[in-house]
Image 1: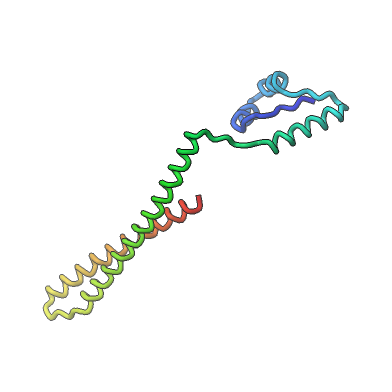
Image 2: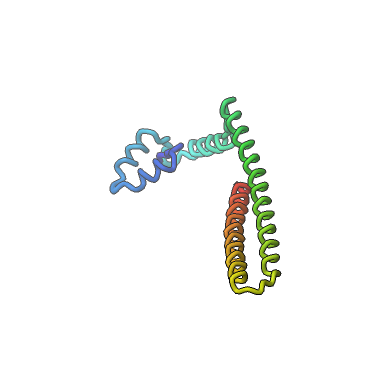
Length: 149
């Protein structure tokens, strides 16, 4: 039996999607480990070797890579803090607009023109509140996604 090891998923997909198995057969013959049929000791040694390789798998990061990783995590924390401040700013702006809208609605003007002007202003404020609410939802969504990643 021949066993092929250390094949990246992309290469395995490429080999498996060939119309014939010629490329895979050649790869197995050239790079595969051969264990004769009935050789239980050889199979056991292979299994033990693979088990040890899996346990020894480790990740080595260069100093430059570690510095880049730290910088990236600091940038992510900074963005999260900025996102929270932006979220707070949007909430404050929404509250301010709601107060202004309440004041407009509380005013009772006698003339028709003044009523129409106040209604127009109230509609504009309502639209701003809606736009800010949507922006707030997007900021909260981005914050939750960056927090979960």
